[in-house]
Length: 185
Image (cartoon, rainbow, N blue to C red; front, side):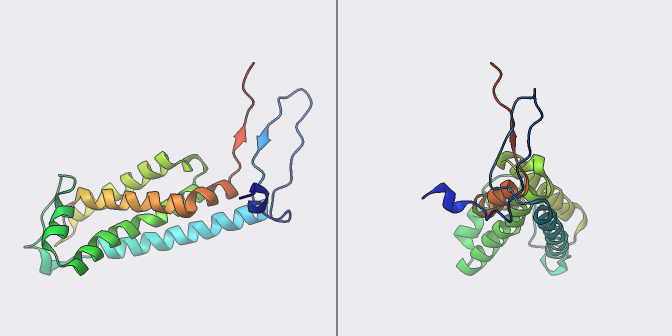
């Protein structure tokens, strides 16, 4: 596919800046949004992240007193996944595994837009893993009928990777220009 076909229309692209004489030229990516569109994109991403945080808190930090006898912490990666696949009805397994993956997707999409320094995949995954680790710790320590499960953190982080691959990487590049300095000779 021709790369020029993927470029943004000229009206949406940021204007090129001239480099002062005597300084090495900077190369900017050509498909960066113009400033008003960048601000709008970041504002929308912020609103979606706040809404997502509210939904995440409601889903994960809501007590489940009926589940107290069924909950147990899992510190061994893969243990609860095997239990879902081997012993739970297919519908419950898909709901549990798919739900945890879906909870991570917004991080992969929104973090690269909101945090220019966290646009790269490893930083997005690390940030997602840290946030979800804190959520799981809060569940295990503070919420009745909930427990810490390392597999949930792994699934959430996998969801962030999927979100980053599908949309986050491109949105991050469109909103935040990457400046490349020429190699020193």
